Image (tube, rainbow over all chains, first blue to last red; front, side, top):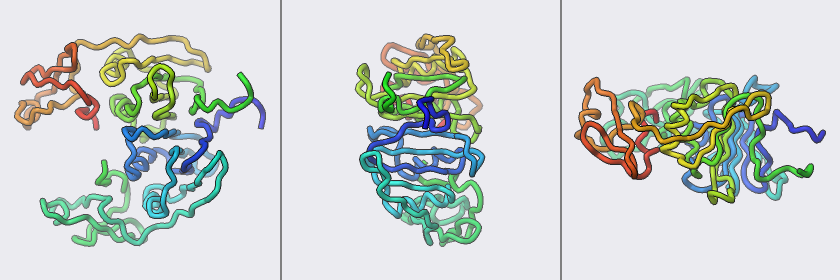
Length: 156
Length: 156
């Protein structure tokens, strides 16, 4: 690497934490919402949105300092960013590369777009979706969400 | 400057656009909401949250590529981030430093926390707040918002 600033890097390396790379361009905010991060926690977060990428055209990158994501958190990310790569970093070195796998179910994270669904009534029922080939399917009313899953985050 | 990576920089320089620095720590997401940026626009945005700062303890930094903020946009930012500095950048050089000044009024940007306020009824009335010494005051019902103004953004 030369001494010239790397224009493609955009955001610096972190000492300890999690690097989520190859996020679908424009999905970084939704990724943060899933992780429950809005900045008030005081933890260091760096975000690059719509960074040029050979593989994806554009991509987002999120680096979370001092926090190592669990496999469960990583798997939920796959719904928004199926191409994402997740690296756990300690002392500037990648110590683990987590595989992103689609979960079988997503509980409590999404709201059903069907207004008549019982999960949208004022009842103590937690939303639950099964993951199907082309999206997610509400286990209560059968409604299927195929696109813009990030728009249905309950955590927004 | 040495060749060692600058741990404090966090996010790289941009060629053209706007650098908003010294944002109150944790307010970056609200700043983006005010600017109407959520990533879907496809423009390059870099964000550093809770970056160590001599002046503020921690701060947020937002760099928006290819967009030069207007004075009106800059002034509204002052409500969330009174210490913010705004630099317009072209070809990696700062060509203008905008002063952040508190606006006298804020129209359409905030929602009134008073549920009985006419701006929260289903009427074609746009919210309007006067900026007072210790916050903002609804011009319709007189409700004053002093803290956490970012929680009342209509654009969320």
